[in-house]
Amino acid sequence: MVEMKVVNLTAQNRQRMVWLQSHDDEMMLPIIIGDAEAIAISFELAGKQMSRPLTHDLLKAILEQFDAQVERVDIVDLKEEIFYAELVISLNGEELRLDARPSDSIALALKYGAPVFISEEVLNMAGGKVRTAKSGVPYFEKFGEETEEAEFEMGEDMLHDSGLEDAVRDLITAAQVDEEEPFEDDGSVAERIAHLRDLMQKAIKDERYEDAGDMKQEIERLEKE
Image 1 (cartoon, one colour):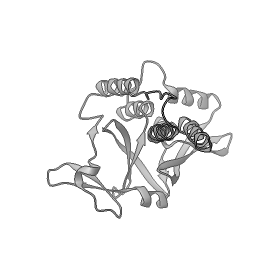
Image 2 (cartoon, rainbow, N blue to C red; image 1 turned 180 degrees about the horizontal axis):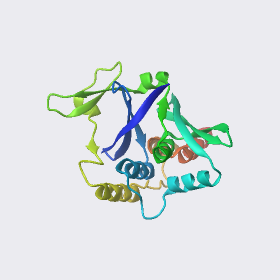
Image 3 (cartoon, helix red, strand yellow; image 1 turned 90 degrees about the vertical axis):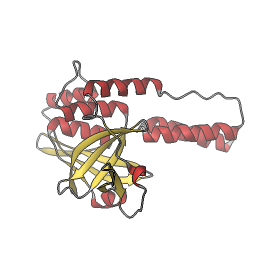
Image 4 (cartoon, rainbow, N blue to C red; image 1 turned 90 degrees about the horizontal axis):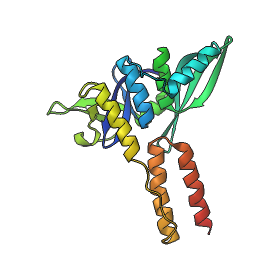
């Protein structure tokens, strides 16, 4: 396992990404996260707190009531562009490993000052290095690929290029206006399936895996008809 540190949170093309960097500063890994998780992580990186507790604040409060402690986060797998993580918790002298999304796990790890690790296999599949273009703009170069500099441009820094308050307002606004348009039952089955596939891919990118699973089941039902 390779120990990583959370170094940045960026926004590009309406996508939020948390950037992990190895402690030897040689490798980087971007993970797409949802708006709610981006808000939680941005406040932790800035050392600030919301006036009222967010979901991850509530989770921390519940763990503390049971004298539980987040010890580490292990990002253990990558399947179909979805990262899988395990949240390692100590409770009554025992170690518990819970299946969790990387975004939620990272947010909790930051609250506890706990380390984040990733398997070397996953890092080699999805990681890379940050290069600097001739223009001085940093961009992400994935391992084993020759890419255009602009394709992996790291995007706008949500913490430093703009104020945290403005960044959070933008995130909340995006979450409100970026809701999916409901599809109607008229039209051909093929059109409905194509529309559902688009929505399912968007749900996966937003880490709404439960919604994506429901859409997949509906697609399978339509395909059987």
